[in-house]
Image 1 (spheres, rainbow, N blue to C red):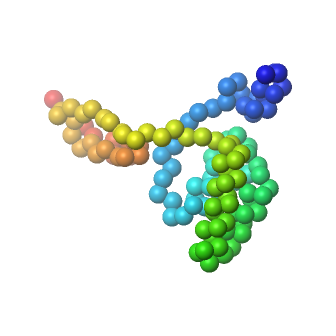
Image 2 (cartoon, one colour; image 1 turned 30 degrees about the vertical axis):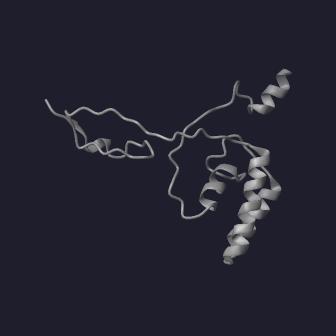
Length: 123
């Protein structure tokens, strides 16, 4: 791969980036699509920009007809899969080891430590 091609493929960062996200519980597909794949998306770190996708997302947000929305989001998913601007790993199990000395800790299936402030270790 030529140096310039590598720069374009990784947005100038050698090797690109891999990150994990616990971004879950959105009420609809737009909450996932917009943040990662819209040109203005907060988590669109790769600066992915697809005019057709933007147009479909705008149409999907504007319609209250559930069948039309579903069809639009199916098309949106096809574009994202074809372009593959991001990929995510999938982890089926979230395994944690805890001690009987650990108190107040609550596991979260998203692996986020939102209850860690309420945790203490007994003597």
